[in-house]
Image 1 (tube, rainbow, N blue to C red):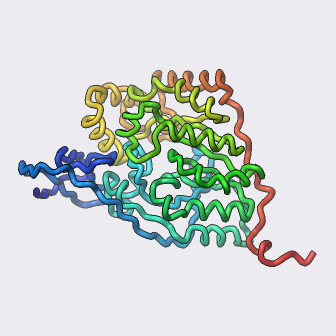
Image 2 (cartoon, one colour):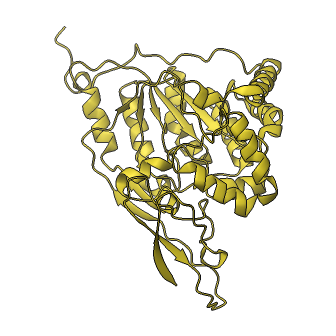
Image 3 (cartoon, rainbow, N blue to C red):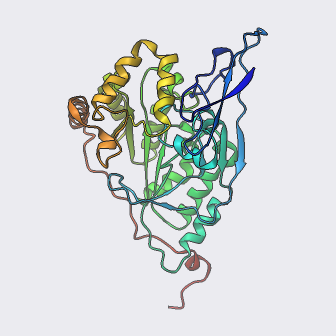
Length: 367
């Protein structure tokens, strides 16, 4: 085995003999900020062993604040918390992958195996609530990476955050594709009883083999539908997200996904067309070439038809839904199915009037 420099962003798929199992990316493509990169290639020697498994490395991160803000006009929230950076689910299409480049790491295999966690998240959130000028608005947990990825089983950072939200009666929204969310029903149910929580569960396909290839360490489709059912039974309002929809690969499942979501108890639905910004485009093409070679040309052709002839269109609004006949057809089918299934109702707003500041819970008012 040897290494040679290569230009940044040039995809170099690892030979199958060197490719780690159970991962989404097929290479460790260099980030856009790196001045050079290295290419690993197979030298022809074969020991007969199975490809080496890639070990996940968890690293603590100690930020000074925990609540992020955004002013994106096509996103329905402006505050979020990400307990983790990087995501072991390994979804090949994940729009958060390029963020790993800011750490000097690869948006490829590094993104799903080099995970940063924030052990002080709950304390930082309580400190944010205690600021004199703080006013409650809904905060999303999981706007970038999944708050219920495998590390959460032991770290319980998301669970610690939910305890703070419940203690201070603060509204919270959750996005996940992991059934681990059901573990926290003892916190989510009382939040829901006060109108303080909504959850969104992403189900991209009902094809278990495709899900395994595309989202290797996320919960299976059936487990996600089960999670929707359990959340619904506990009184938690749930949105099923068919996100992302991949033209030529998963778009034929739109109606079936929504039907299963409605049957499980989802009250609303949402979707996003596949996005391929920055390093995601070459990573996704590598994945198509090695996993769905028969569909690769058609998928990318339909994607470009929905993105003005390019792999990606970053314009506000267009980046989420796409443009052109294919994108319009997806939109019409999605909304028609939502109307038929009763998933087009306006989502119940979470309450902000019950908030109790940390200082008020420590020292009672004099009046």
